[in-house]
Amino acid sequence: MTNDYSLFSVENLRVAYPQRRGQSGWAVDGVSLTLQPGEKLGLVGESGCGKSTLGRAAMRLLPDSTLIEGRVGFEGESVFEMNASRLRRFRGEAVALIFQDPMTRLDPLMTVGEHCIETLQAHRPNLNRQLAKKRAIEILEAVKIPASRWSQFPHEFSGGMRQRVAIALALLLDPKLIVADEPTTSLDVTVAAQIM
Image (cartoon, rainbow, N blue to C red; front, side):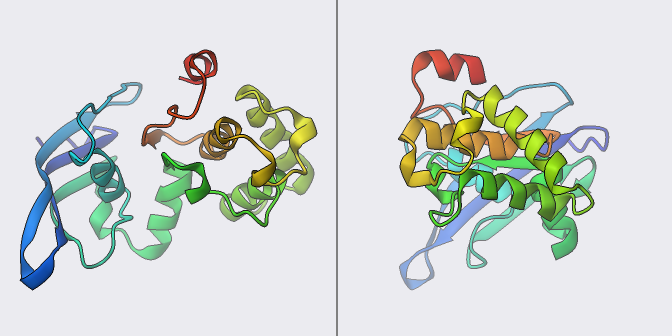
């Protein structure tokens, strides 16, 4: 299944979390998939079947104690072989992850605006603050967060609005791939349809 021209590929991925007495059970067992630029893929399954684990494994966000076999590739490069610097660029500039719980991504002590500026300046240090704010407001408004909410903290938003902020943060850097773990569960049907 190796395809160096694919945007993203998973080959025979197996993931096991350590359990008592050295026993392991495979949370993900033998998953393979390939995505080309412009393609969309939805994983469907019952709760606990490994969908979130697959997404976190693909982004290298699982604990070091996790047993992982197989290959995850992005534009022909092995994600599991990326050094820390390359992995940092991969996880924001190339691929973005939207967690099911937006508070996984949001610092309660930072305003929405500070989250946006920090994200942009971490990955685009040459972008001045004024242009960063302009870009951030465009993206926030695209997900129906008005510019007037720029200086507010996450606790001042409803659950659905926090999720839209998390989606905006993922979109800020215009990633080539978005890995979304149930990104619309806290959104009303109309807003979910607009965002998707």
